Length: 351
Ligand code: SP5
Ligand code: ZN
Image (cartoon, rainbow, N blue to C red; front, side):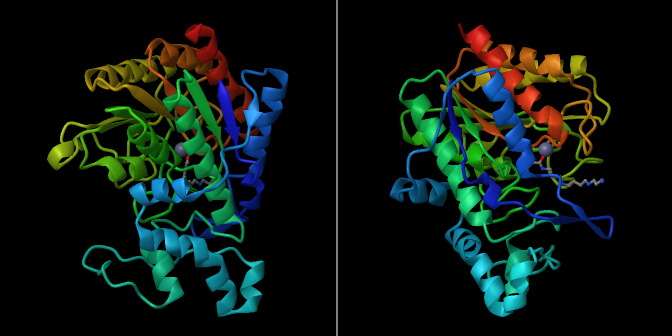
């Protein structure tokens, strides 16, 4: 398996996220990815490589899934923040005001505070000096993984953080800024796959990916996740969301209650893979979060380390070329074993 690693991931190392009225340490830390690298050093399932250099093709791919004014804002947000007050350089940026129903999103405010609210949906995803550079290099990893698979590789992994699946056409949130899984799907489409599927196995609903492709029938989006009635991101991810317009029928949500066992989860995975087969997808993107782990501090499913081997095997048996993108997983010390188990299970079953 080709593994494209984001060597710039540490540039995004935010300090605090808002939780229950307090600022608490960020769950989404550089150590998460370091644990995957350490485990890959013990169990090499593929050589590590850098993505193809940042180029015009990356801009083009990003522009296909994100709005220009969102990308422009994110690219310049840190410089704007520091220009407001040089003392801001010591503090990460968090939004505190959002345009809810009835407010206007068409008029771009001049105020920085207003614009960062317009382009986000929570106060848990700090933007810092290196956020853009880290996220952009991650997008390059996702694109490179998709290009490798388009070129005939059976599987490739974008080993990156910050994660991506909560980021929508023009918003960040859920620790995500650029949607790596969507970028991989779009790249596969642009390089020969007529129909692509995204299967999101992170604990949280892949709201960003769903929203990006909601009106399209060429990219099926499937997500297995904690029921949004009780679980983050709360406002999307219900079973009755099936897509709209041309995309009607090309979105499948499989919400499961907090406390769901591995047995029930794997049954839902079968339903998700059946939809992928029915879509006649020619390539599969797996948004790989391992926050389904029983020890995850912010999630509520009960998968164990061995279950990730089984997941990898099952994904391989779907028989499609696969791009995996690294998403959530916050039991930091176990993230490496769990992620590499998926990759190892895949390689063992892919033969
Ligand atoms: C990619 C991904 O998995 N994003 C998840 C974002 C979840 N953000 C909200 C989590 C709030 C939980 N905070 C619990 C703090 C207890 N100490
Ligand atoms: Zn998650």
